[in-house]
Length: 248
Picture 1 (tube, one colour):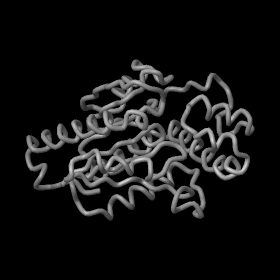
Picture 2 (picture 1 turned 90 degrees about the vertical axis):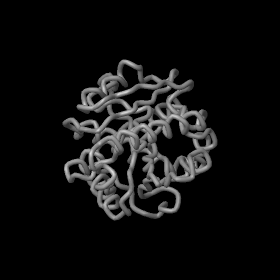
Picture 3 (picture 1 turned 135 degrees about the vertical axis):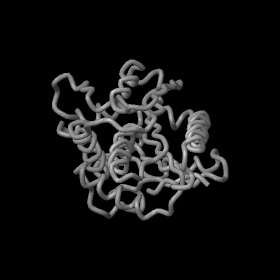
Picture 4 (picture 1 turned 45 degrees about the vertical axis):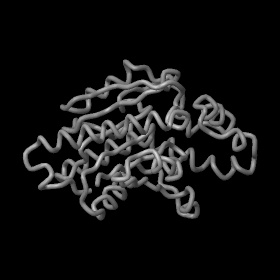
């Protein structure tokens, strides 16, 4: 068995990855990070503090049964996956590999000096959401749904800003970087994740915009599995890797 831990994008929950179970080999255990305020945790208080969110995720990871593990994170999820891996590496329990999808390296700031999106009024914030093309049209057109979801999305956008200002240092874990050909994150920008690891970095581009993982789910899952297989193979070659196992 191998474990794939999935970190969803802003506003997303475990359901983002439900269909992945049918697209991965049977020996893959898929676990999705479930932040408060969404899906079955809709009634829980939102967490806008990045350090607290990561602390809670790290604590949960350490309760899991030991298995060789790979992390996948999309957008906000990529930043959370990286910092979770960094902290667990400090505790000598890192994942085998990170797959970071549609995720700016932390040092890149494309705000153009504008206030953070989550601090803008509703009209400007909604325009920001439209530009990303990931919020369902029925939500954007419904005052009732917007009233429900805007606080969640603002909270998650705040997590993105805090992540970019707090993530520091390099890890010793190889990275696979995924991007969308029509996203506003360029391949050159994605390649700058090389500044955050001493190990190898690969880059793969997919058709589509920022949310290519939903429109090209099968291809993304196929690539993620190839990275998992590659990481497992590398682990076999590493002396003692499977004797120690990876604890999360």
